[in-house]
Image (cartoon, rainbow, N blue to C red; front, side, top):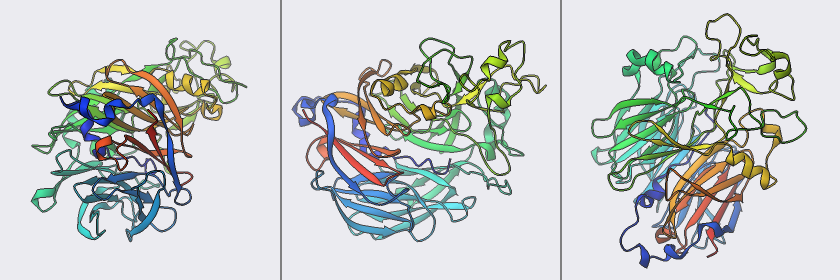
Length: 499
């Protein structure tokens, strides 16, 4: 959705493989389990610190700031323990949704004042702040990233409808060729129209009122392979990941993600905010993965491992709302013989589900229940779309153990995993998972990407949006840094390993 701003991953492109000289690098002595807060700054109110991007050459952090006047805030990180605000870059019209930095250039994704019209990318010099180029994009560019080689700038153009559905632009990805005078190619997904039925059978979603296939696609977030040849794009509302060939500038695949079964011990979660406690139990409910952030880990020419944070999202507009409480649905008595008990508020009655799935014969009686998001992070095969790992209910369990689980969100996406970054710390690959509703970041060792190991939770500001990793060799203090920007309180926090 429009306010789900996410963070470009270009700052951590060096994580993908460890070089033969890694044992000589200072970061190899670091222990990711010792990350602790070393610096913090409050730059405004709600909307003031959503996404950030770091420029190693100037030691400056660029932060989205939309809490009144739309701008990019510039922070000096020469001493990460003493962050100093040094400049503001006005962006004139339209909210800034995302930032990315490469080789002295800052790319900013900016939506039009009327979000259904084409947006733009503004490119600035990171030293002088001067505007280098403005490039048109598709409607509502919600995320921007440079390719690892710096030759491309990509935006995920969400193409959300107007609240009254008077306009519903095509969702697209803009591929901007930096070396070709910033020429742009807009890629949409209309070519998959003929595969619609087959995709739907695998858990893909096309359901917007009167929307064509291309209009109904809503790209959310992008990651790019280390060789800059392939991009993957989360299609959050559609419950899928798309694959793009950057050489031909074409979409080659859509991978439907299917559904998660909460009726197993490993996936047991709390689905009520009115049950007077936090109890994880099996339930006859499925979750749509609906990922927001995505990051790729690919060593050499091996399998591209796609890490997703499965936040979930709802189409909820004046003219159309897909969400409903279970208590307000008619449940099929054969599928749910205990329907009355399930619809109690202390059971599933308060759970938010979609009206678009579960009524197989369109008789108004629901045989299955599908909730938003999967309350987890997952790893997928980027070549086939196969699920390789899911964290099941562990994020919820760890939040409860830490005393930070918010039972008020049990009925609606729980901890809400949203932001993600990958990085190499101490010779190990670490994933950082932002948890918007418990104000924390979870750290996992993913050196074996199909068997992640939990390390710790770090508390952060209110509603973390941006999760950014800076490797030690590019860091101002030569330590690995985790930078978390939080949208609800305007706070940027910086963490580093103690050891």
